[in-house]
Length: 270
Image (cartoon, rainbow, N blue to C red; front, side, top):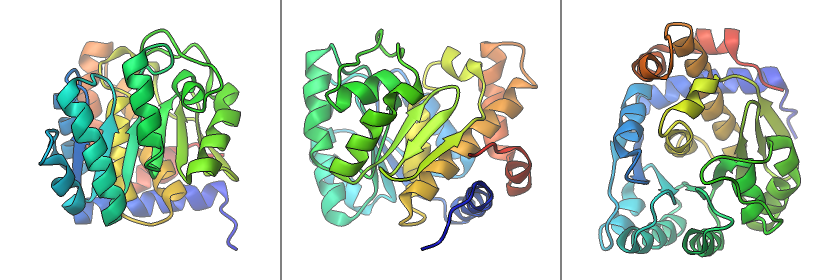
């Protein structure tokens, strides 16, 4: 069994970034209406191809041919709910890696029930804030809308339970992102507060994780890589921006420009 040191994760992340850009994975995003445009632009900037195929009868067949799939529960209207279950089912059958982002679950009944239905379809990756992950595990939780009221370390028990019970990698977003496969725990301490001050900062990361997941069966490694690339790009963008408004275009530029050398120099992984 290989020992995956922090340096191993940094080197692997750099290699996966180069691979993503050479392969241009096709990422199907069934995501919320607030962030659709931003998510598509993030995928384009990093080197993936977005496909916002989110209606029933199309979502399932497309999930079978996509490189990766994001299912994001931000605005779970009736038709997208049907498409989410259809796509997740088809992805599981076809071996297409898919990401569940259980946005704002806990106290809201429609999305909470849907999240648990989707969890039973065994997503490859679950990405959420601490309150969402705690709620998904049935251990309480439920933040203030999309905002967490818990910190990532307090969600580690919940994340570990989900990972072991459903075979998912669980990524808990925060100032330090906590990522686990149920046994190993990896922490990525890059990023910038302005990611939380723009619409879609977390949601788009789920799409990036879906793209990286298509590159290798080691989902822990690909999830760490997606997180490291995304958060290092945020740091670079913040150094050129004056606030959230100028951060968004700078972030898209940084996602486009960040390279393996920069990632090796800046990624903080433990």
